[in-house]
Length: 416
Length: 150
Image (cartoon, rainbow over all chains, first blue to last red; front, side):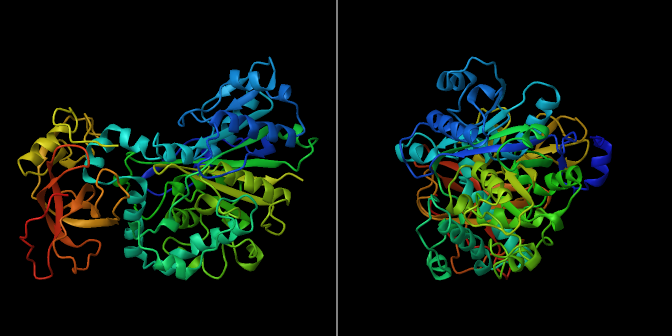
C-alpha cells in the first residue's frame, strides 16, 4: 500500500488559526479493531480498576478469537491512576510473553490516537496484537472522598494560582462559560441545547446496562432543573462512573481471517489549541480543538463528513458535544442548535434521511463516564451490525476525543 | 482542592501582590508591546523576557457562569465567575468573579465594566483581595455598594 506523505496530508488538512494539527504519519488501513470487551458500568461499586481492566481485556481477547498468549502489545492511560502494567497482564493471564508497552493509550483523546500509535508499532515490527484498555473508578473515589475529575486541573500550577482562587473550577464552570459565549454569538436556546441530553438519554434507554438506562428524561424535566453551572444543568454534565473497556488492534491482513467483522482504522487526527493547556485563553471559545484534529483524519482517510454514517463524540458536557458535531463538519459553526433537531442525532435517522446518529449508547451523559472508551466500543458494534440501537448499514464511523485543550479524531470503516 | 494565592510564587506571585495593593497587573512583552497571559518566562513570539504592567481595570465581559451553591467546595455559596478581556489587551482573558451588585441587571457578553477589588475567602483559608468585574449600568455608572466577601 502506498502511504501518503506528511506534506500531502498537510496540504489537504486545512485548519483555522488558534491551534495546530499534529503531523501524524499515514497509517490508513494498517490496523483494525478485531475484538472488544467491557465490564458492567455503574455508580460507586467498590470495584478495583486493575481488576476491571483485566476483565475487559479478557472479554476483548475472547471476542477477537485469540488467546492471551497471542497478545504482544499493551496500551494504557499514562494520565489516570491505577491502570495495569505488563506484569499485571502476565500475572492475571499466566503468560510469559514480553509485551510492547505504551502509556499513550486509554481513553479521552488517546482512545482515538492509540489507533495511530498501535499501527505505527505494527509497521515497526514491535507488536502484532495490541490491547488498549481503560478502567476508571471515579464514582467510587468520589463517594469515598478520595479523588475527583477536577484534581488535575487543581494541581496544574497556573490554573491552581490564577483560576482556582477566583472560583473558575471545576470543569462544569469552564464549559458553562464557553456555552454562554456560544449562546451569545449564535442564539442557541436552552430548548435547543436540551436536544443533546434528551437524545442521548433515549439512546441509553435502549442500551442494556447503560447507567441511566431505566430513567426517562423529558424536556419539561430538563427545563425544570435549576442550572448547576448556568447555563448548564446537571443533565448537561457527564456522569461519574466505575467501569472498564478494552479493544484488540491487529494488522488488517490478519484481521480478515479473524472471527469478527474488523473495524479498520482509516484515519487519525490530533489537534491542540495554541497556548495549551490554558483553555481560558483559547482563541475561539465557541469551538473545540476538534477543528484542528478532524481535517487531518479526513485527509488521511481520504474521506469527509458526507461519507460518515455514525459518530461518537466526547460529551463531557452537552455544549461540548454540540460544538464537536459542528467541528467535525456536519454543519456550519453556529448552526448546530437547529441542525440537531428533528431526531437528527437519533439512531433511527441515518445519513440517507439527513441524520447523523450520535452517541448511540447514551454517551458520557447517560451511558457511563468511561471517558470515551465506551464510545469506541459502541462504534465497533455499529460497524459490525450488533449495536443495541442500530444505525442501518453503518459503514464508516468517527470518534471525536477530547481533553479540553486537545482533540482527536478516529475514523473507522467496516472491513467486510 | 483548595488553592490560595501564593505571593512568593515566581510566576504568579506578582499578580497577587499587585491585587493586595488593589492593582491589576499582567505580564507584557516590551519588544512586541503585547500582553502575554498566562505569565511565563519569555514571550512565545519573540523570546524577549516579560515584565509586569498595571492595567486600567477597564474591560469587557467575555463570558460568565453562574455557579450554583455546592458545586465548588472551595466556594460553597452561589457566585458568578467571569472571563474578562482588558481594554489594553482584548485578546487575553483574566479569570475573576463578578461583582454583581445589581441582581436584576441583565448580563450580556461583551458588556463593558471595570475591575474592583473584593475580599475572597475559600472554605478553608484566609481572605485575600482579588480582582472582580463590575459591569457598567447602561447609563455608565457602577454600583458603589460594598460587596460581602465571597
